[in-house]
Structures are given as C-alpha cells and as structure tokens.
Image 1 (tube, rainbow, N blue to C red):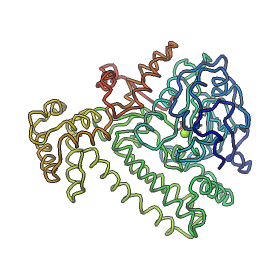
Image 2: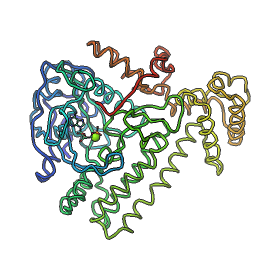
Image 3: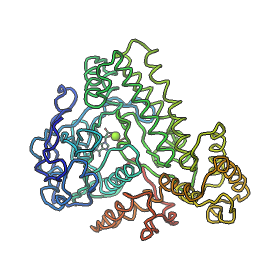
Image 4: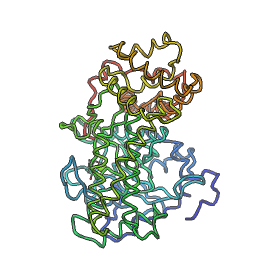
Length: 501
Ligand code: AMP
Ligand code: MG
C-alpha cells in the first residue's frame, strides 16, 4: 500500500490519492455513474477526527472546493464514482435486489500513518438516483444526515467499530418525505461498505463465480491474514461471525439500538453501518423499539444479539457454495454464542468496575438487568452514578438510589454488589476512575440530536458542531457541558424516529 509522502503533515483536498479497488471488480458488481449535483451547497458540519484519519487538513472544510466535492457537485481527480449492487433480508423476509439507491462510492484513499487500516473508502450518501433507487429519490434529508454524522463520530469516540463521517453538506433543494424537507449529503468513510447482503446477492442468483470473487476481494483487502489458509472461506465466515458477536455485545453494553438490522445493513467488517432510526437506551426497557416503523419489535433492544446471529446464518447460507458442506458453515457459526456471552459479560464486569471474573458474575448481571427492567432508570445515568458508590458508605448512594422507584430492591442488589466488591478488595477511587473510563457520561440522546437539527433547519449549524465536540469526549466530565448529560425533557417523549430518512 502506498503511504502518503508526508504522513504527519495534513494535506489538501486535491492531494487525496484516489484508488478504486471496488470499481476494479467486474461490471456486474456495480454501476459506474456520477453523483447528481445539488443547487448551492453549504457546509453543515465536519469532523476533524475523521479528516485526520485520511490526513486531510481541517482547514480545508471552509473551501468551496471541499463543499462541492462532498455534495457531489465536483468529482475529485482519480475518483471513479459508482453505486454497488447488493440484496438482502429486510425484517426477516428475502427482499431481492437492493443496492446503493442513494449512496455513491467515490473510491478509496490512503489513511494517515498509525491508522489500523491502510485505506478508507469515501461514500456520498444522498447524492442522487442510481439504477438501484427503486421507488426512492436518491436523496437524504438534513435531519437524518445530521443524525448519521453525529452518531458515527460518537460511536467511534465510544470505541465501538463503526463507519465514520467526514462531513454533512446541505442544499435548500426540497425533498419530499411526510412533509417537505431539504436535501443533505453525508460523506461516510469505512475500509469497505461490503454487506452480508452483497454475498446473498450472488448466492440467490446462483452465481458462484461472482460469490467467490467477492469473498476473495474481501479477504485480500480486509482479512489478508486468511489469504493463504486452506479453509479461507470458512475462516472468513468464522471471523465475521466473531466480529458481529463482539459488536452486538458492545451495542448492548452501551445501550445502542440500530433500528434496522436487515442483512443489507450488516457490515462484512463487523462495523456499525447505515445509521437510520437508531437510539440510545434512556429509561431502561429491554423491549424498547427505537424504530417507529418496526411494529413487531423484530429489532428491539433485547433482540439484537439474536438478530446478529440470525444475520450471520443468512451470510453462512450465502457462503455455502464456497464451502465443503453445511457442517463446515455450521462449525464457523458455532462460535457466535460463546463469543457474544463472554464478551458481554466482560463488558458488564468493566461497567461494574469488577477486576476479576467470578463464577457467579452472570447472576449479579442478571439480577441487575431485572432491577433495571422493574425500575426503568436512565441507563447511561445509572452506570455513571454507580461509579460514585462507596463500599462502606451506603448514605452516599442517594443520587443513585433516587433513580429507583423500588428502593428496597435497589438496596438488595447494592448489597450483593458491595459483597462482590469487597471480595476483590475493590478501592473506591480506583474503581470510580476505571468505571468512568467505560461508562459514558454523554451519549447521542434523541432530544440532543433534535435540538441540533432544529437549529440547523434554520441555518444555525453551531449546535451540530457543539454536540459533536461534546460527544467526541464521552467519558470526560466536561463540567461546562453538564446539561448535555441531562435526562430528556418531557417534549422528547413525543419524538419518533422511523425509516423515513
Ligand atoms: P436502508 O434500510 O435505509 O439502509 O435502505 C434500504 C434500501 O433502500 C437501500 O437499498 C437504500 O439504498 C434504499 N433507499 C433508502 N432510501 C432511499 C432513497 N431516498 N432513494 C433511493 N434509495 C433509497
Ligand atoms: Mg442500508
């Protein structure tokens, strides 16, 4: 991989060295096309942290060339834009061909020195119609683009694998949803946007050669350590299942809900992708459904780990022609359950400030989730206050205890917890510091996003920038930003997020 010439000096837009590895796949994998320009684009928000990944100078954000490039109005040198084809299961039902209906891949660029992946693809979401737009208009509205931008960067700061977001540009061009809104383009970055549904696409068309080609492409570019292995396709499936199980554990632990876990929204790299009607758990309810369009609750919070597994089975089925038989695929998928359980338990131990693993930890964790379910405290606030618990001073529990309706039930659980802490000779100050490093104080609550969106809809983009800055440091106290950790106001009860975006 060719490293940038001056890896430490951030460079200009024009110095992005585009490669087009996905475009080099056979024509059946994509349609080459240009983004459709938008009238008079403007910058809504941009992420310096995302720019740093590709060595781009944040000073570039203000240039009209930057805004033109990332609204689809100007193609950067070397970029060969395209829309990729894929299929998928939507809400458990085979949906046939989908594809990038409004996302346009610009190509891949080298990352700055020290970045884990050598290259990042840049993709414009909302850049106009493609052959895969079906009934859609190829556009994305400002509201959902701001939500995707902020959440991508917030998840990265939380340490959860995710696509990144470089920027959002807007245009006053009207876009029809339930009401008339305006258009926006979110520039996303990921090493690859290949989905489980990209594999299903070839399986359901019985095109084994393309299926193999895709698997080889993914292995070569993103799992090079598997390249020479005798059972490399089985290894790929095993590794994707492992990463997916880890991702699900991370979502559950932080209280993130994706909202639309269709197989076309599942990353072959185990990243969180395609942010739509997502949410962060507030008043705890394991059955919470963050997507207003998900009437059956298929993607409710408590379903996510099982759905992640279901999706891996769908991938396994699609990859069957590359393997010796069902047993081979089954063996690759067997790891999902144990990996999920072990990882989730470890994350919960970390959240509880427990250093050692004990045989009865699952019991303590189960009892905690029953307590949370009965009392519905704010999930983020609960863990942040729990770190202030003192082993020998129950009187100091008050702010934490206040989150519970059933104080006696809280006291009973806190008794178990204290006994467990004493057993490992836990020290209050050290435990608090360790817990604060894993239990965020700041998450992207719907009402916070809504406030930033409403200002942005009136051309005031300051709150997008402010909220991004707060969410980039989710574990820090940030006393000057205390109000961003507040519980949702009453009006937030009426907020609904749906598939409309
Ligand atoms: P999603 O579940 O939101 O990731 O999208 C499912 C499919 O619908 C994908 O193929 C998208 O590209 C497509 N899609 C969603 N919204 C639009 C739109 N406004 N125009 C064109 N295609 C869209
Ligand atoms: Mg999608």
